[in-house]
Amino acid sequence: MKIQKNCELWEYRSNWGNLGQLNLGDKLNYLCLLAHLAPSSHNTQPWRFFIDEANKIISVYLDREFVLSASDIDGRQAVVSIGCAVENLICGAKYLGMEPTIKLLTSDKKKVKPFVENEPKITPLLEIKFTEVKPYLKLEKIVKAIFNRKVIRAEYDPQKPVPDEVIDLLKKTTDEKMTKLHLITDSLRRLGIAELQSQADAFVINSPKFSKELGQWFLPNDTANFVGMPGISFGLPDDQALRMHNGLLEKTALQPEDGLKFALAGKIGLEKSPLIGIITTKNDDIKNWLLAGRSFEKIFLTLTDNDIQVAVHAGIIEVPLIKRIFSATLGTTRHITVLFRAGYVKKEEDKNRPHSPRLPLAAVILSDKS
Ligand SMILES: Cc1cc2nc3c(=O)[nH]c(=O)nc-3n(C[C@H](O)[C@H](O)[C@H](O)COP(=O)(O)O)c2cc1C
Image 1 (cartoon, rainbow, N blue to C red):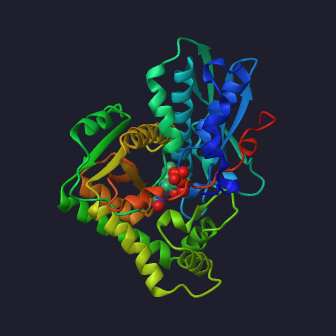
Image 2 (tube, rainbow, N blue to C red):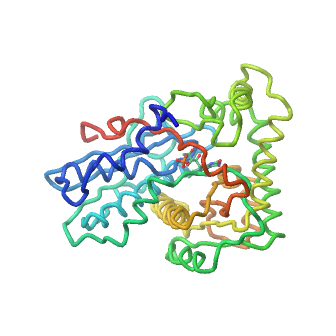
């Protein structure tokens, strides 16, 4: 299969030779590559990095131009995405024998909101300083999973549960104080969550502001864009992906069946998945969003390593009324921050969908410290 230019980064694993023998500069670049392969809301890739080789520091920034102004008004999804990237980076660092010390640079929630004119575009979020220790080689399979990981928005087999030993691994990914993982396997509660998700999706499709924004990131299958989601990653053939893209952007009328299919796919996906996971946080702030992202990516990589697929559903979290109903259903006063489903695909071929695009590495590594 020919690899599109915007998907080339996924092939870079083999380009680095013997990782243990890389010089410090190359190691730090490699860690940024691992971070850049993380999942992000609408595949916006809102992270930026600055490498200070002399002091062994990687600074992590949020580019506010890549925070979704309609569906992510607080910047929560963007910061959770950066948490995912940080988890990849830290896993890679430990694997290479670089122990990280992380410093949070801001707790000001105004600084992570979508960009508006006359405000800074780039927000420094974290500084990660490394000291050399022994490589933690047990992490090799997790680093490998970073290159294999992808969201699969397909139907999973409800008859094939996630094995208990994998569930036990997932339970170790949160600290139970700041972040907590709630696992739902019974069909009744899955049905309830699926219903709420379909209401959130219907809200998105029917709200011009939300649907236009989605259209900018929901792309035709042959897109050369380096950010955004080709329709194939939703399982759509070329004609339907193009129709959905144009319909959401109001270039052509959105076919009623396309909108309905979109909401139904999310609903059926959740209803049929043997496992739904919800990460709640103690507080609704930058620190907790980053921690939730780190836990989610840990979960995602563990599931990938066990050949179990994952899809994310942020609609329930970012449509306020639905979120309130959902919190009540879950019986928690904690903050619902990530919702995902996991399972084994019903149709094996769904696993072969291509990886999603990524910006070239040079585009996310800043040349000046902001
Ligand atoms: C914080 C966050 C929120 C997301 N929300 C959704 C969502 O609501 N619906 C969806 O289909 N995918 C969602 N995703 C998955 C992204 O769209 C996906 O990670 C991105 O397109 C890149 O694809 P990849 O993870 O396969 O590399 C989310 C991912 C993250 C990290």
